[in-house]
Length: 238
Image (spheres, rainbow, N blue to C red):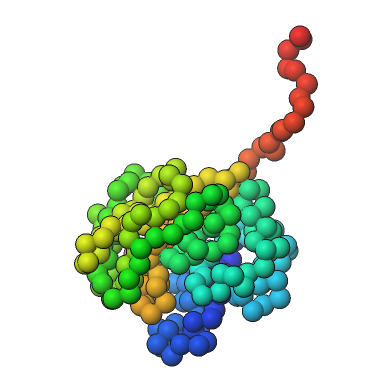
């Protein structure tokens, strides 16, 4: 089974009573509890820990890193971002959740795009439509996932054209959003999954957890040959 590290900045839960009421031990703990039923080895890390809990040793032992951040993006040290970036290029999977679209690591992996979007916090219904029912990330999910209350994200989402589009969301206010996107960078696989605002109990939803669980299996590294670059001797006689 994949070894998973769940990173959460863990700031809202300590400062906001409304968030603390939903996630009393933190979003990272709720996710770990919801995902451990699949028998995985799961660790957690937070912003306040030394090296944000993402030491080289931790990352070297991580097959898939899950990332949730919001109000502390600028507090993540560039040295740690570069460390995570290299691990993704080397094959570690990365799952970026909700407001992680503004995380330094996601922006670095996406390139020149701003990763900006429209948003509105009004407790709207979100319906996440499966647009690729053959993809392993959607295994066990019906035509759509319906969340009674979520923060709205709307297009245009300023990210590179994804390798694969898995989900599209519709909100009560009328907006739509590309809510499940995959990318490959180096040897690593990346999945961005939209739902998960801190004031709503989204990460207790069994279908949301199923998608994240499926994404872990999809994103975990494969045994791949060492890639060769640079000046190379010919295979045939010149």
